[in-house]
Length: 94
Image (cartoon, rainbow, N blue to C red; front, side, top):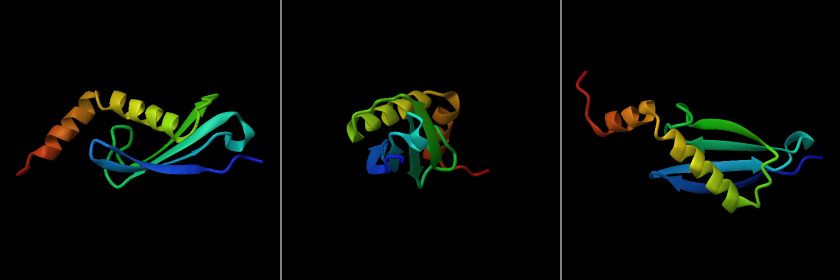
């Protein structure tokens, strides 16, 4: 039987993100992490992302949060995300 999902919320760059994770997804030693946000994130345009991490061995919410924030921080350096943030700050006439 698989471990149940754990959940918590975090704030990343003023965005509230709901995080759910399961340590032993389908008894496969793979962690399943879900991100849900009402706004676009650098890892998803829709606000939802499902991530599979083999043999992660996280020690609970704190380590999952560090992993997720690191993933978001790294993705936020992409030209696409930087342009999206810049465009979001400015009013567009066309």
